[in-house]
Length: 507
Image 1 (cartoon, rainbow, N blue to C red):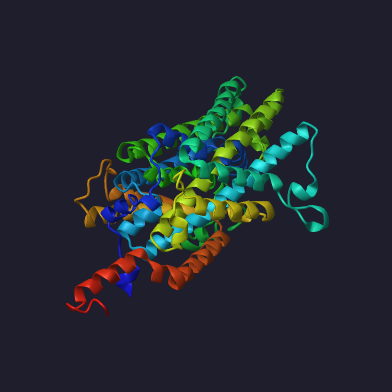
Image 2: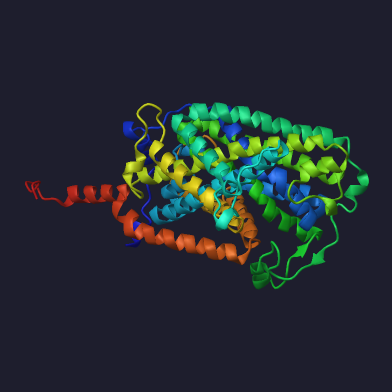
């Protein structure tokens, strides 16, 4: 039984599967498209909201260092992703990578994890987008009925119509093709980056040096498990984390890590890239470098404009300009945030549908979902199904407490990919690798350690929910995936052909 649970799918077979006409995705993306996708999904809630939250509660002006720490953790993982995505240019990202190295059950687990991560991330971002749009409508004198604008409508019924509508519109765009999605994303990302650059350049004129004193505020002891701190840290190491101080930077890094979630989605588009061996590493590493630079610059400017203790936790960028006597910037920044979250939502939805598509093509999910559209060459069936489900979730469900599941899911994927690089280097040293992760196994091991450390900084409740979702996934695998696995059926057919006696074909 253990041999079937950990059977691996050869890299060559995975690539051959992508050439089957009924499962072949259209190759239309360039390195620039991939970089735009990466920037489009990374720059979102993190830069417009989390900057103020962690500066005020955890790190002060040293929040810039927290972004650097989180960026380094992502960079370690990005180097591992770049090797895999260029060597195995197949939809599915970490799911496909682990199938080639760790085996079927671990691949299923990480695929199941990614489905939750991307679905929940899409819904959370859609609700955030709805809030910005509702605020802009209020400023213009228009107001949606309570029952259609949130969770507290008449008689306790509420449906966030804006969040649901956004998901459905983006679903339609993804069905129509990747090139159209890339063009729309490029336009929206350009607007978003312009807004961020305006914040950096204009805000630099209002920086006051006194606001950086102290750059790393004095540490303050807090109760174990309070706020954003994890009781797991105290359980394992015997001490409670502290707000501010040097340890406050690491606590802040585990929170602002949410701002980087999504760069790994670039890897899910490997199968739709014209030259993945060259362009995937450029897209993954390029987008991460650009976004880390922008995050650090924005955090330095905002904490210089306004003392960290006075920063807003809801709209720090906009309120910092209000504090300087320039309130008109607030509307401009809110518009940029709303526009920016549109691409985040679309690319998260893109990543989920590609993982779902890859799992169904392997038979671990119903093969019905692995047929591509005859004209648009997109996986339209899982895109429509998941789009409708996420629209309903975004419309009805309060997601604030569940958002941390997105963090732990991504970090878990980082761990799996790093381990997979080490294993595949040993089991398949003959593979041509156009990009090679440096310093193997040291760098992947460092990536695993850094990711696990940030996971430990998440609340214990997040671990419980994550464990429950993983347990459900294992049950689904044994009830359906294991018996319908395409790889498993291929092995059975091969064995049958070997042992079947001559002249007994009719049996």
